[in-house]
Length: 235
Image (tube, rainbow, N blue to C red; front, side, top):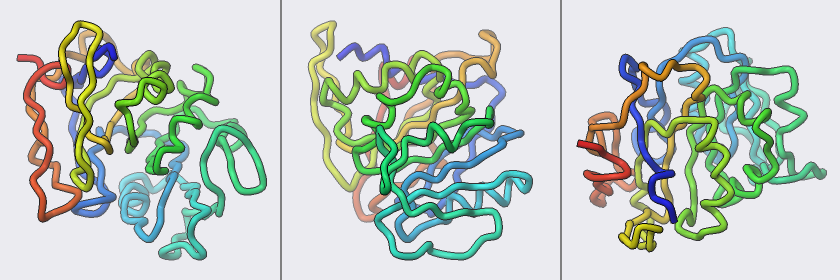
């Protein structure tokens, strides 16, 4: 693995906030305006992220995808539940979202789909990726080379600006291309923002340790993962 691909950046004047539940299901986002669609991919019994996002963005509507549930957690006049899962194709039970994002240009994606994210990313073109203004994503099994390869294009179009390890699971250790060893949480939360929305002088390498004060452990009774050096932190 080329660990430089996982370099974390800061938006110099950016403001982060937490949306969603106080533990598992909550994510750190960069405050931005003018989204034209929220996609909630993987909801289960917790739609707190989607509801809080819509409180902050009263002109935005949400498409929430989850084919594993029999009913949506709550009723909201700007959330449409689609009982399908996300994947790399379009079938009766699966969508790759290509049709759903047609006509939109500033989409926010929240995604936790238990490993199907890689198949979905492999289906996307750069044109698709550049429709996504911000992505919060839980990855699973990132240490496997084929999974990391599936994410290469999103690292080309987006800055990684926040990381958090899901402590429900352990970590894997991978050998990097420079011979060093890197611990990768088995479930890893990422926040990406679109590069084209920022000038070069608005972005710098991240210098803050993770977790930050906005982060909370997914499993409250366990210690959180700690990140203090490259590629996550640059001092």
